[in-house]
Image 1 (spheres, rainbow, N blue to C red):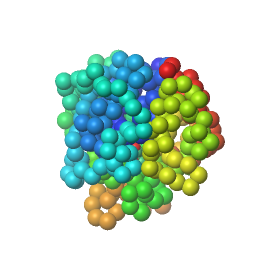
Image 2 (image 1 turned 30 degrees about the vertical axis):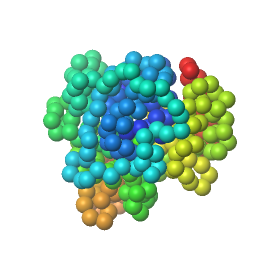
Image 3 (image 1 turned 135 degrees about the horizontal axis):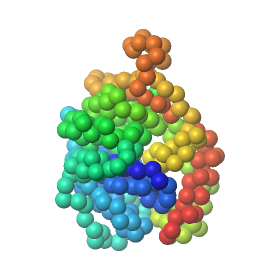
Length: 304
Ligand code: BDR
Ligand code: CA
């Protein structure tokens, strides 16, 4: 199994990503860290715990950054509800996060691992940037970053910026300039893989996990022509089968200030970087039908 750390801000699509990930025998999840994003970090942490208790999975959880590195924190409760995970009645949580914060917890897992670890991040990258700043030597233990975020074809918060990068562009710049292998699964992919109404309506027949996912996905306000994007789930799909998402190696910079803040700019004409320089493997295409089919299979196989 692939050793991974998940860093997330559940969030409805993060919740779906956790549901899929924790039920995959080919993923060995060492730790889940929470970050402020869709809602406050106290709520995102609580939502991770709710999901792990729901699936009866014993995975350590650590709470991380309360706010972006430099910018003011603005949530997305208009999309994900006040709790970040509405639409299903989860029982009161009985477990707790670790006593150490996300950065210390990630550092601890990385430095004790026998093999390099893949970090999958589906919220703002604040925890990751803090890790790289505080423990630069930990890069040696990171195999790659698989990130949901960014876009090279227009944004969802502004005309150019995607929410996770927009929330903390300074953190994104640190991660993108880290020199580590990065796969960016952004809106170029996730808006092509909308969960159709037909798929959503099939969920309640797939056990309690299907009912839970139906509840939260129905409450999700990210509505597009043709369905609802399960942005973060795409990173899990890529982690288990990279062949289903088409990628291109590109030079990508993050805009940290001004009206284009949060944009991820691909230097496709090599006007900014030297010919041949690439730092990000950018997801550019996916088969929407295959995604819907795969998602339903995942839910069907969940042990709940
Ligand atoms: C991203 O923003 C968040 O609201 C979603 O959870 C996803 O990670 C999409 O832009
Ligand atoms: Ca997210």
